Length: 382
Ligand code: PLP
Image (cartoon, rainbow, N blue to C red; front, top):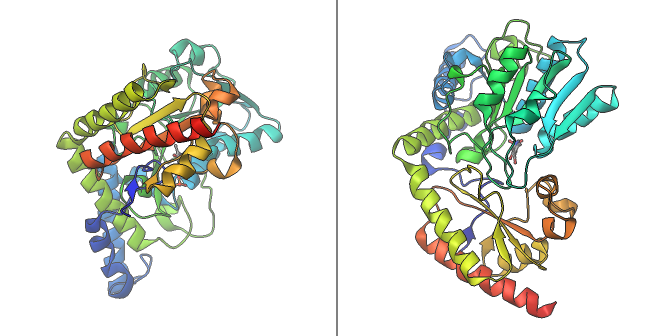
């Protein structure tokens, strides 16, 4: 049975062109990018080219503002650490209740060490009116950590407004753009964002590589110590094949954005949603009134366990998720839907279908009929 893969917010398929770009860097050119010999210099050049490509995707004014890391999680941890170290006497951090664990967990650790952590709730549509930030972002804060796009609902947050507020009040802003990059045009250079996290495997690049954009590296406190790599900002031998792959993936993502790829994908996503909602009584689309990424659909089905639905869909060859991939092993209702004001029973009755530029109209038709069948079967059992 052919797999219909609709879990692209968990990870995406590596683009064949990315694999092709990575392949010489394993067996032919395996030099350490810090070595002075020709193979080392070749690797350093390849890393520099990838840095420029990733920088272009997000609109960085200089490629040196991009630091390669091991992924989105490290980048979030590093961005948070840098802000906290910059203002050691400020003891308040503001974030939202819908962030990814890669942000929530390091902030919970700060809270245990005595920081005040303010977690703002969104409205029922996953939106954050600016006054929620205005009320708590002030000179006591060493950080506002805000995701650009939510991994479960696709809700896109008003980063420009938050950045203007932070700049006006002298508070560093860290943005988790892991689910936004490659889906929305980003222009970090135009906004006063201090640090921003990216991950390659969410945009058809390899797993285990990411990047942290750092607007101004003066006084930047690295998370990893132990070597002078990445201009003294992230120690450890560079993952050259992974970085090259990320660079190529960023280039492909940019071409897709410029070719109006998101509009086509959003119309596939809209068809998926409208057909499911029309055919399944007691179903709804979460954050449908919010601006959303083009690929993400979070659906609720009254009285149906999201986990049971994911497992049944998997038997029919459809890969989906009940919430975020990281949370799915935990059997807890979605913290994102809870924060949006849904009851635990409703927050557990959700399904995330996340598309990608590989998704076809046939995938959507198959997903619609299979979801309709699976929800009906589960309700009959109950
Ligand atoms: N931030 C968000 C919003 C994510 O969706 C993810 C991955 O699911 C991460 C951070 C972590 O990225 P990585 O898997 O590269 O560590």
